[in-house]
Length: 535
Image (cartoon, rainbow, N blue to C red; front, side, top):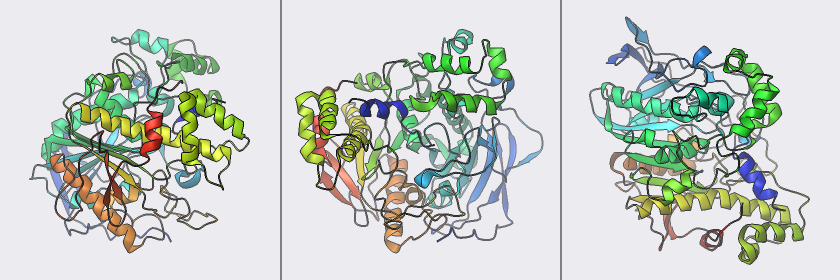
């Protein structure tokens, strides 16, 4: 299920306790007037540590439903309504696979629909002008939803920000590219509809944040995994210019993830359409979503980058935009975890030592062999060493390169590395949250997505086996993130100092129970990876 990085990673390898119940829902409500009409929020069922009363507005439309003739079209502004809209129910999730099981990312049955372009707002005071934080969920751009309990915004809102989560089109509904779609576009563009959804949501925020207690001039976008890739891509998109003032990226960049082969996605789009036996857009738009999703799975459409170079949303490969200094000039906070590849990427159990050498030299020439002793351990097989190298190349190297690009354009940049080991559990399922690992719930290391409950302060809403040490890490992360959203600098009261990143010292905040600063994490490995690679 979790084909998070698809063909990019495969190309590398081819080189040779239960959640607590919410408190009783308070009866108080709050009514505000936004651009589309009057909306009534409800009290959050959770009281944050600050004691603030949080109002949540669930399921607010930020675009028209992308159904019928609007399937595979840029999102249109939402319509207005008469009377008072009761914002007490989350929307359906965007159309995606269900009943999938893969490590912590297991998902079972939940409501899905193509009518899914809605967002959710948590706020403590609609009369203030607080910093706004807009969250983009991960899930390989093929799965996920902004209203999963792990993303409940009550704790962050309790620290004085307006927290917004969104749903955006996924899989072939959000990222299918095909020449027929480009031919009907006034921009000659196809694909990246999921990115256009995020841009539409940010425009909605500009128009409505003030009514919800937010400052439209102080908007931070943040996301993890595919959501972090989206943050990176929006920094490279001219269409998102001026819609946000700060950015946070957690565990995925966009500066080394789009191969030049089929960069516009047309080859995969043609294959998908041929499998569907659809030769016109009318025929494609008349197909049932289940049929499209099944064909996507059959053709392995999602095994290459969902984000494509379409010439409009992304005029060029994002790495070229960043390298030329044409990206958004905003402060950036970003980083990665110690064990990102755990159960995320496949291990080639049949790889020989000679095959490992061919893999390393193909990518980095003779310099690549210098990586071998940096990763080798007596207990690791050649396939496991390759797995570690490829994981760092995608994750750690991509994030450091992103940080370097932002520093080069004179923007405050803060880099982190989380080695705190959280418990592993079913992130998106309250029943059962337990995940059976032979070595216990903490034997997965600091795994990909292990930071989510910590950043949102939701350690007591989801998962199992949380400790006071986990809660301390969560307090630090929330405070760093909120400080950054306020001022573009994570430093402030209640947290250890965090010096800015620069390419020479490479100051990196190591996040655990007592955060400290290291000058470069895995620096020798990443420096070798900086040498020209053949992909």
